Amino acid sequence: MKRCLYIFAMLTTLFSFKVQTVLEDVVSSLKRGNSTQIAVNLDQQVALTLPQNTGSYGQARASKILADFLNEKTVKNFNVLHLGDNEQAQFCIGVLSTRKGDYRTTIFLRQRQGRFVVQEIRFESN
Image (cartoon, rainbow, N blue to C red; front, side):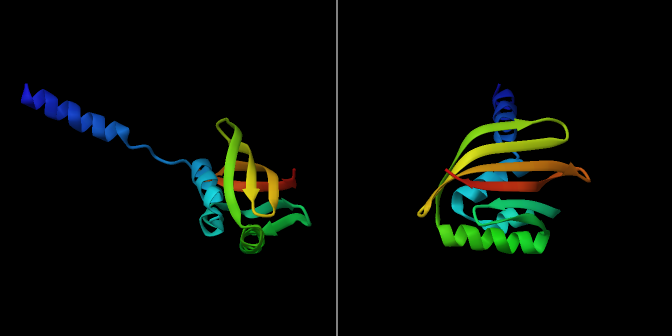
């Protein structure tokens, strides 16, 4: 009986661990304003839409623009409104709350070489 309880406890512990997806990681990082962690998940070419700056950038430049934006605005929170996915893509729509206003935010991820990467981020003034 003790052996069965031990096995049950081990299985419960094993299955209680959840692997965080790239989208969940990006959302979590956005809530904290952590552009460094978001940058880890950027594709080689990223489309960014910001209130004063729109374009397609290489990973390093997109990372810098994103960091500047998040640091300038000072993130308070990010609320997810909608999530979606299929085998090849994932997306999230939410509201980024900052000290300088709220931004409707859309994040698109695409699967590349077996993992999801951020392909586009849009921040639109509410």
